[in-house]
Length: 209
Image (cartoon, rainbow, N blue to C red; front, side, top):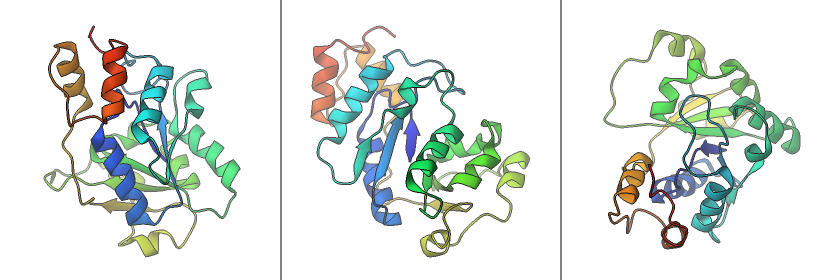
């Protein structure tokens, strides 16, 4: 599971999903747009439109799935609830992984029911090589004893572990910067999949920020 607002989806999101699937030998990666992310403001583009852009971005990429399950849920989009739904579908013995970026990881102790996340899945943190700051105390307590040294040890059980992973292609593309460029009528060529850029242009999305 790779969640986020995908506001809009860009090549950094999609390349990370492909490399996560390869690095962890996953059957598939569910990219799940949040309807109402609890720790940030509401996206300016509707959930349905963000899902449509994600579907276009993924296209026929093997192993990537645009999963809209959070969009029909009332209230905030809590990852624990999404993982619980996936766990129910996949069974108790399936190895379930939630991937998140380093910035989101730093706030993990503030999430809704953070300990429940580990009951349901492994967490894989896409590390930032240039980030050396100490982790917050509450986060250190939350992850104590959970870290795995490698993929093999992480995947020895269905859930409960933490792995920090550096992906081969760290594409420094910011959705915030993309929205700024789109609002100003500046080029976003080679930052988004062509089909995503075409739909944004056709529907005049992100022009009012």
